[in-house]
Each structure stands twice: as C-alpha cells, then as structure tokens.
Image (cartoon, rainbow, N blue to C red):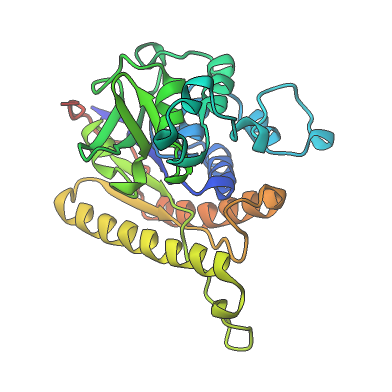
Length: 307
C-alpha cells in the first residue's frame, strides 16, 4: 500500500534574513507540498512554531511589514518584539546583566499571547526546536518525544538568544542560547521523526563578490563579520547534508539556500527581496525534485520512532 511521503521543513536561523523562510513556504503551498514535521533554530524556530500550528502564511508575511503596510491584525515581529529591558532581578546580578545586551523576555511574552497553542503535546504537527546549554551540557531538544514539559514560547525564546546580543534564557535551573552554537541544522531530528523528504531552508549562503565590485574587506567590520558567519555556517550545513546523505540513503535531502546577497541580518526592510529570493530558489529546487519523482507516493512503512 502506498502513501504520500512524509515531508520535513528544517529552518536555519539568520535574524531578519529568516523572512526568506516564508518565501520558501510560499513555494511549498503553490506546489501542494505539505510538511508535517518542523525543525528549527532561531528564526527557523519562530516560523516553525507558528506555521506548524496552522497560522496562515499571509499572516506571517504581514507580521514583518512596517505598521503602515500591514493588511491583517495578526502577530507582528518588529524589533520591539525582541529587544527587552532588564528585569529587577537582572539588575541585582551584574554578571548576568553583562552576559548580553538585551533580554529576550519580551519575545517570550509576545509569542505566549499569539501562539494558537503553547503546548508541544497539543499541536497537530511535529514541532522540534533546539537550544544550546551555555554551561556545556550540549544540545537540548524541545518538542514531542523530547523535552515537552516546557511551553513553546519559552523554548523558542531560549533558541533565539544570539550570544552576546541577548542574555541566556533561563528555563528551570539551566540557561540556554541559540541552538546553532551546537549544530547549524538538526537534520537528525527530522529523520528520527520519520521524514522521507527533508527540505532544508538555509539562509547562510555567503555573498559572492563580483570581480568588479569592492571586496567585502572594504565594507566595514559588520559586513566582514556577517560574511564570516555565513561562510562558517554554510560550510557546516553542506558537510552535514553530505554526511546524512551517506547515513540515510532512503531519505531525500533538498537543500534550498537562496542567494541573500548584500542583505544584512537585521535588515527587515528588505522583506520583499528576501521573500522573492527564498521563493525563487525553492521553486527551482522543488520543481527539479518533482521532475525526478521525489514526491511520488511510496510503499507504506512504519515511521521512525522518536527516542
């Protein structure tokens, strides 16, 4: 007996560049591709926690628009939803206060009020997000079959703590930062959840400077840092996909890495460009995969169990 393939969406981080994830999901919808497994870190975790619960894509796209351009009354994700002031408790702990420039508590509160469900066990899709224990205990996975006692809003807040920019987020007696400190993409979680096809939405593709253009070295320290980060994380992603292709030949991995170009990590005003670049790259990769028969029904078999 045949069944449709189980599809996973794995979204990387990337701050405002994560808007490109929504363009990739737009291509999914136009091609009738419906993921049931969502894995994410940072920006990818925000998208997964909302879209994976059925929040309409148009609402999520609208959330990134400037207030005067918005068409819905859904959640907004502007800078004021991220950068919080320290609490009274933070002020009494100078060491913790100096561990980052901002608090992520504001984002947690924002998500808590707007998520359709704040309980991993009650969402219809499999949503898995990853954080890094700052005290050296490695990767922590939040979601059904892993650590599911934590509200989704708290898990996503922890995952969005970019070291240095945000103070590590406390859950219980542990502190967490962005899960990409440990792994750029947690492909193993999608495989263990039973995915036949894993679509990787990676927005860390480095900028390729044309010979006639000035070197990135001449564009300031921020651009050099962004490019270095993109090179490191893109290389980690490439090697990870190569490894998983060898380890899991029965699973198809589709790498969608849109050319973000010169758009910075904090430039949400380029949302239209990011959406279009994500969409176009996804259409190219997904149509090619469809022509190879990747999305054809396959023989039924039990889904891989979560550990």
